Image 1 (cartoon, rainbow, N blue to C red):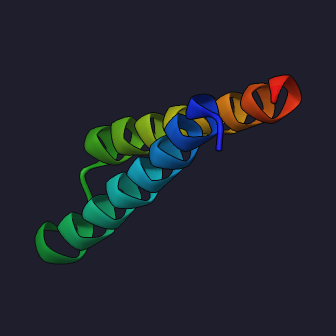
Image 2: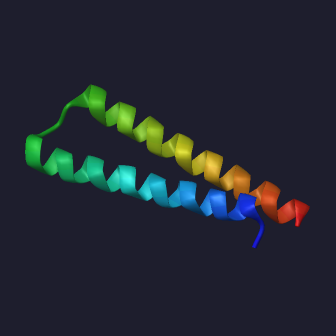
Length: 61
């Protein structure tokens, strides 16, 4: 498996972890819109970056 594909999958897993931590924090401490938006943007960025890495890694393999 190409290294870019592995990196992309790792970034996608990190996206799931960020989303999970945000969900647990929201359940425990209530809603904080600024933190939720920041966590959402971070998770979205990780997901997009992971998808790009997987696509580039698959295309060049």
